[in-house]
Length: 393
Image 1 (cartoon, helix red, strand yellow):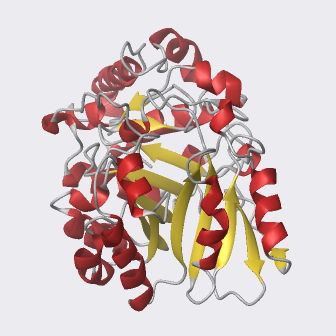
Image 2 (cartoon, helix red, strand yellow; image 1 turned 180 degrees about the vertical axis):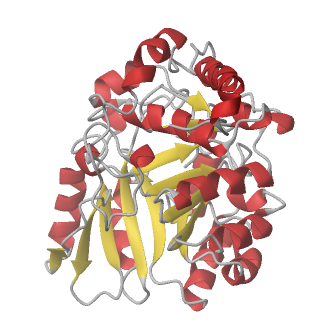
């Protein structure tokens, strides 16, 4: 471990700076009063010397993943989701409380330079996929510049974005030029009136236009995310499957998940098994695809369809053992698990002058504390967490 030690003749200066750096890093792991339980100073005090002791002895030489991104269960984290903003032009009921949420002030949201610096650090350490989320990422004014800079990072294979599609159609040609090569568009109903009820806004036809624009621009597949809720859109499951018949669309049915303020109720949950049964009764030629170990979805082909159908089963059949994802929130907090309350700031150390080595220490310690799996759905519902609008889709 090397901080500022520049030579034996300056060992005392280096040691002083080392202690200063350790003190700063420890200060970032404090108990948060607003966003759940962060890493505590006491824990950092006791675990500082164990940070490297808990790492695997050696990563294979042909594996580019640094120890910083390997947790205590041996999971290699190669996928980083970056929320660009907490702001959104929709007010989806499962994402945001009816009364709205208090947003992070603009001065405390990561700047373009901070985003690119952290992304570069992660990519150079082994991350090969970045997904831009929000809020609604496409409303950020510098979205094109961010995409351009990120897509040029050496080692990054995939630059993706999850969007509500409301303003995407007119922006997508330029975003594709800037290196955006994978797209997820959120749409929970094919009925305009239900869309307006769920999102508290108009715009269904614009989302559909964005889906078809993405297809025309050559995105393959165009992923459509659909959160299924009993009594709202569970009667549209097969209608969504029909979207995959003539176009390279991957419809992804997502189990309804609990977050602060979205009034989650198990009675609203339509399980993966039930959804699959509905699809199987209508389509006899449905076949499971062999999924990658880190895949979050269970993927299926449908006989005669150009596209595919997937199910994201976070509640009834979690996929934690293969999890390779980390989340960087718009306010610069690193979140190692979607359903875990623990967060640690990377924005604050950057603004206080931390160098890359210090940032790696903070990231590595957070990754090492990632649990083997998240809690069951009833425990998740009772665990303090942020609204989805804060976390990022």
